[in-house]
Image (cartoon, rainbow, N blue to C red; front, side, top):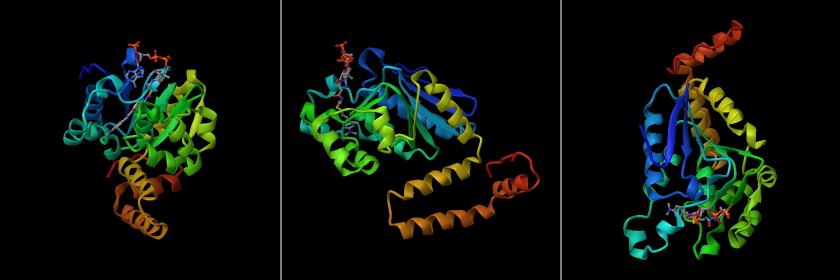
Length: 258
Ligand code: DAK
C-alpha cells in the first residue's frame, strides 16, 4: 500500500510505520493521521505481525499537529467534526504492542502520540515538550494527562505551563522513556526489541499489555485481581503448556499463538 505521508512496511514479524513529512518536521496533518490509522489497522489484522514500531526521522519524530492546517478552524469546526479525534485515538486502541522510536523533536501532538504507544525508546538527540501554551491552546491529545502520569505533577505542570523542552537524559530520569540510545543505533535497537516481543506468544504479549495498562485505569487491588484472572486463564492455552514444557526440556518454545 502506497501512502503519501507515511511509510509502512513489514520487517519479518514487525510492522514499521515511519512518519514521512520531512518538509514539515513530520507535522501531524489529517491525511497523515488517517494514513497512520489505516496502516495500524493493517498490522493489527495481519496474524504475521507481533509488534508494531512507530517512528519518524532523525530530526523529528513529529513536531506536533499541523499548526497551519488547524489555525483557521472555528470552535464549531473543531467541536462538530470532533477535531481529528478518531484517527488519533487509533494508537491507543491497538491490541498488539506498539513501540515508539523517537529521535529529534517530539512536541505537542508528537509527544502525545509517542506517549500513546506502549513504551518509548529514544535517541540521545530527542527533545520532548508540550509547547501548546505558546500557540494559545492547551494540549489536546492527552498531553496534560499522560505526561503527568509519566513524570509527575511538578515536571508536567512546569513543561505544560512554559513549553520547555525536556532532553533525552531528563526524559529517562523522569520515566518518560524506557531507554536512551545513540541516535545512529536507534532503529537497530528498537527493531531488536520489537523482534524480541514479536517472538513471544502473541496472545500472551497482548494480555501482558492489557494487564500493565490496567495499572493506569484502576485501583491496585482490582488491577491485581485482573492480572490474576488473566494468569489463571492462560492455563487453558497451548502456549502455556508449550512454554513450560520447553523450559523443562531445555529447548526453545515453539509458540502456536493458541
Ligand atoms: N505544524 C506545521 N508546520 C510545522 C510544524 C507544525 N507543528 N512544525 C514545524 N513545521 C514546519 C515549519 O513551519 C517549517 O516550514 P517552512 O517554513 O519550511 O515551510 C518546517 O516545518 C521546518 O521548521 P522550522 O523552520 O521551524 O525548523 P527549526 O529547526 O527552526 O525548528 C521546531 C524546529 C520543531 C522547534 C519548530 O518548527 C517548532 O517549534 N515547531 C512547532 C512546534 C509546536 O508548537 N508544536 C505543537 C503544535 S500544537 C488533538 C490532537 C493533537 C493536538 C491537538 C488536538 N485532538 C485529538 C483533539 C496537537 C496539537 C499540537 O501539536
